[in-house]
Length: 421
Image (cartoon, rainbow, N blue to C red; front, side, top):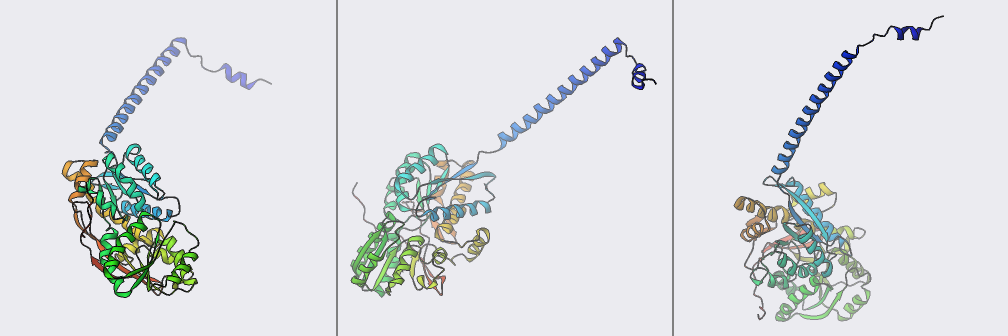
């Protein structure tokens, strides 16, 4: 038999050498042409990408410093949720310029607040700052904000001393949307005095707690209300029974409590357990949905608390509903105030800065904040010469386990003692 494969090989066409050379030249020219075309396309593509990159504006950075860890981390979480929802509704863009949120943890203490602010200003190079969620953090951050010449807006820090240093007080970069406790005390103290001849004062051991009671005590003295008990408790305190025993001995007509939801729910739970029945006034967050969530096993714990604040569940029902739909959790003071300050105040200032100067710089945003005069769901926002705004005051309670807004009050500037230069 013959070898079929050998036979086939013998009849393969022999290509002359000259034809091989010509074919090689054609292939070489084709490869060169293809390479040239590819290079041109690549260059053009890079040019388009480069032009697009040049046309893409640098993002505007909003810095948030808040307690993301520690005993009041739920406050920082609330700030971030509120700011995130505001930016989502803005599509992370203002006047065609992208916007980013940069978060730094201040742990609600002065040392970490200074570190957080320095990081936002010097490392992240943010254009405007929201925070700090706690008065202790906000007080400590003031010199760094002024030194870094970066506009900052407080949404919830209520210590009255912050007012003294803002605006004409020296720090033109710090603004505060929320009222402080001196402003609120002048509205709330009368209501308390109408109900109580003697008071027990209970507060968290922070600039928030101490600053609030320092604002109320002179007013109570003027009104003839006797303070028979006063005490301060560290954040995260688990057992208040010794203090509650002292309150029982002092037997005041009512208590004024200055605490946020986590500590306040623990205090109120133990107060109910030991059977104290005084009227409860609050200057904190003891009528918020978050407080109700912390005490959901016993809805009677917060029943009847009367609270004065600058945010209340029900002040903006449409947003309360939208917030729940977005995050599957109820709105709260820090969540709500963060949302409004970003959506209505900071975004408006950025928009105005771009329209006025063509760009949103730290200086142009600061100048725009100083000129803001707007109506918002939390009330009017316009800053006085100390960069302080005067939104609504709110009076609220818990009825049948439900946070209930009773009234809103127009807040006004108050007389203050000025320190010697």
